[in-house]
Image 1: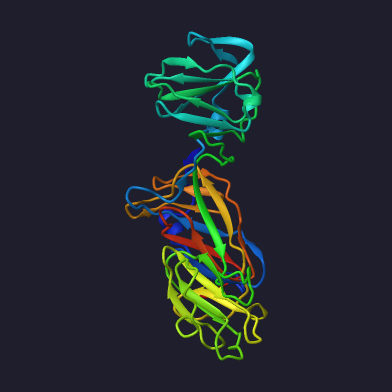
Image 2: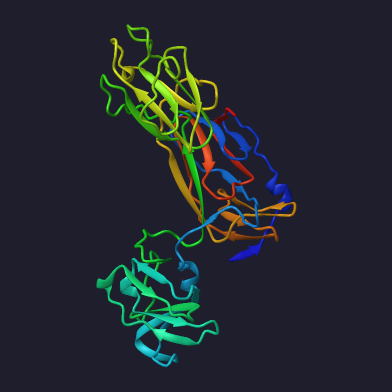
Length: 376
């Protein structure tokens, strides 16, 4: 629930930067944002600022149509909707007085907590009952139902007279049995390393092996401390696109002090390798980084994604930027109100971290504070 924001002026809050105290530093900027950590850690002090592009804010709508938090406020115990659409008292049923918008003539699927849903009741645009789907059995999980031509809303009824647990209920459009995801808007924050090659030399032998890697759009450079082999050629290559031919030590070979740079094609580059002339590339370090220059070697770190779920998108309205704040566990809106939210800590790994936001609309700014170093 939104409440009126107290304390300092909202605009001042949004532009406030933390002071450096010893090793604790503040870094801010539009993602992707780079920082360096001395060890694996969690970032418990951050702020993500909203943006508006094409009428959309930051945060992608999840597939779950069931708002659990709102449902708990609209639970009606010891009541049910009977065949004619009337609400009657009963000792063995309850329902959620929350009309869920749906599309007509469309499949929907319920997964998880199905034993707490006994009927799915369909309504037209005026919220007049159209039909009650047959009694749903827990053995039917997942359960797919089809809306009628005039259906615009549905209600869920339970065979429990007291409040059941709907916390992990998943209601999604279509017939697919989807894994549970929280209702609302998702901001996926990923901390990846600067080295995007995991140095997994699968298929390595005396014949050249081609391994396409999805790295996203941009320019990428491969470097290594492996010398040339006894034939004065290379055993490591970088090629644009997802390919299975084209390795050439003259055109795209990589060896000590001789990196190679390409531009990805459809987000792909291919790392090719072989054992030859007494040189096994897996015995050496290889570094594939974004950009046209080779960076100092860092070991590969598996990217870690943290999903942040919000009740509403964070936007920019005129000169006022909405934001979320981890320390305060709040989402601040342009109208001066705020809402309590549950924000997770962000995971960082030892070494260079590149923080990116996997959302359709990129945040205007991310501010982080911790025992980190700015390397951007």
